[in-house]
Length: 115
Length: 111
Image (cartoon, rainbow over all chains, first blue to last red; front, top):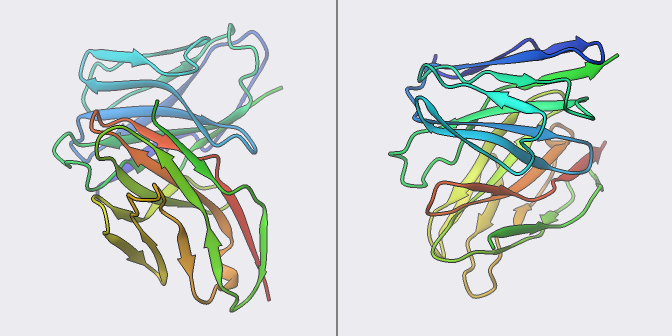
């Protein structure tokens, strides 16, 4: 079955360490997105990529980095510069050919906790 | 700019009660509108959608109608079940393929 796989589901990080969250999709979707979810605040866009080897900052990109070397993969690195990294992270993807019919497809999320 | 305003929660209902979660939007052009549902510890799942004015999206007993005149896309269900307990997000997709979310409404259905 096609879908988006995020791993790991739970991740613990010590302060000052970088950590990378994985997002893989086998939907042949062109665009991929990373969102951060905090309690009571909905979803906020961190980074997005419309095509391979290109990505754009979202609303809260500071302290994060991404790469898009393959169409299927869009890993997110939470760096030590991110002041409050504890959150639930969601990856999503979309095909450019949907013409708005399908919205985004989401992964099941990674909960990151800084200890 | 484009945005979505969603009814604040939490909402607590008894089983078989009628549900309405309000959603209004601001957008240029002709956006598509969506409701997503998030069950505890999970990602978001598409619940229903509408891509043009007067379209009605429906799924699992939930309905929402795209009202351009009132810029609204309210979610309704005639009889909620305990299994409907989740967080519901209204979302708007612009012509540039950018998705804007509301803040989410937590629904708890009690037996």
